[in-house]
Image 1 (cartoon, rainbow, N blue to C red):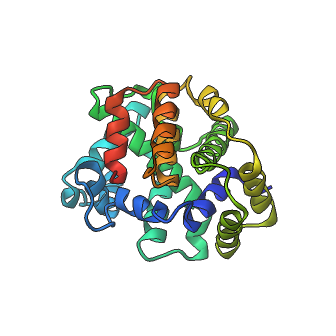
Image 2: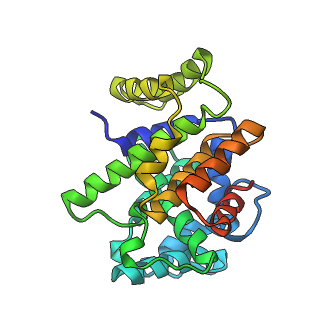
Image 3: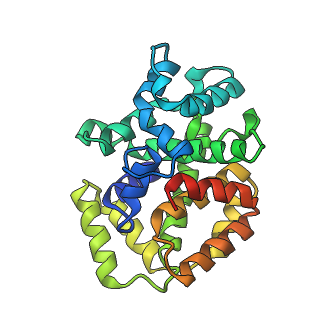
Length: 265
């Protein structure tokens, strides 16, 4: 079966909602009128990665992304332990690339972005994560166990995004066909399509999402961030869902506020 990271990449590339891709670009600082702060700082992602890898970049982003990656790298014992390759692939795909060479890395890039968002949100709330709390998406997998943890996290993020899309009611057949059609256009295989269709047809399961993520604060923040990328959050039902999700995950209001600002809400 296609890995959950790959399905996540295809799903985000296809766009869960009309604003999903725009919000992701806003996180990367390419969305035009972003809200500033960490969102706009990610616009220099190429420069930041160059700086992390020994280049001269970093000055163009106000140092914010480089600070986040630098802090996480120090916590892990070195920048080579960061999953920066996925970030570069994602930036290339969204900002003008998107060839077959980068499509396979999109899922890893999205998990890395979600990890950076989570790390930054906690740091902005005065809670800098320790090494064991560095989000899984930011850590370069070194063992089979690490790879399995990343895939398990990507699966949970996928389910959280699809669950959030049901906040206004069950996803109708026209919407399922739209998303599946875009998945196929993005090159997703039948197993990815079947997984997404199956999840979309399931009843909403907020309790299951919360139970799977609540034990790990940075994973919980990634789940919340991914849910923000999946829906518009422009109806009472969606706003209520996001509040219930935040409460269930036990996320501090400062952390959720930082994540919402990052996506441009």
